[in-house]
Length: 497
View 1 (tube, rainbow, N blue to C red):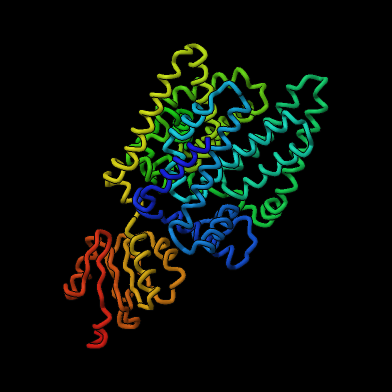
View 2: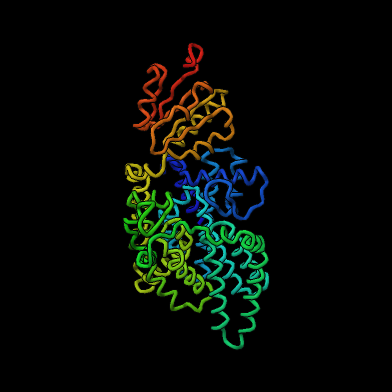
């Protein structure tokens, strides 16, 4: 497993600022929230400091990472890399605990074959915390079923409570844990029912104790707590039924109608749309088919404490999260469950046809090559993702930070994703001015050249900005693929005009 994780880490770091092109604006907003929380020493379970409201657990870790590494793309990415690697590792351990006959190479192949986890491991979005929490809670639940100790049960509930502070989708885990716990008590034999009640009681105790801050917040601001994610609800009952249908079939097909951020029946975030518009499959359809084979096998073993819990999470996710559309960001939660189901499906094939092992290994090797070739080679050629992710904002932010670090005053003019440029220039913000013109021409009063007299102007290469850049002498301009750098330090000595 260690060798696989090292190779996966190298893949995560490969061309990290190129594919995707720079940081997404949502990711940058989350990092700025994290900095606000850490540097301001704010204690909040849900913050409304910048943009939309958001849970804070992952944001605190992000703020600490930025504090340690500085406001760089690496500081954002290294944390999501860690969460992706831990998700793979815990999922592998959990699958072996569920069925020791499953070979490690098979579990790792199913988990790492998904570009879904890989993309979010590179994006830096806090949604990457959801699958890690599901794997950790399921592993703790498995340990509880073996040890039958109050400590293990209490730990399971505690981890479930903490997950709610990380990402909205994790609320499904708590609901699933409660539903599955009640079913476990009902299904338990009469001789074992008292033990089951005690175990579930300790799980509830851990859940309740670590949920106190969330409960208090819910009483103080019920609308804000209950409305998290409500902006994604669009359309009517027929749209919702269609969304649930495609959420169930997500492992084998993700329709092109969800490639747009905003639709008649859905509202997805840019990181999800960024992936889908390139035509990439979150899960290869063949692997997805075996996931459904594994789901049927898990259903036959639904009395198993962990498999029953994972099935409950999957069903609730498809119905509760899925009714607003199969967003890859929100549904990322179920990926460890799908990976385990897929491993069980391929395990079923191995049991029926022992000689299929070599064929399956070859198939996964070819699949890995095709998937990652598509991601790194074909993906950047597609023009649509670049419209969602403005890599120029990252390039301009990095260049502005370098120039301002030398004491120069910098004026940045960008088309979108201002938060990204703000994040990357945060340490030198007093020497950097940023003007964003989203779907509108440059307004001179928003570019205070006469007052600020910048030494350098960085103008994004954007057709509506060409006329502005053309006003300066060509000998002062340096062209790059992302922006035009104009050295204006000598102009103000002649005339401030």
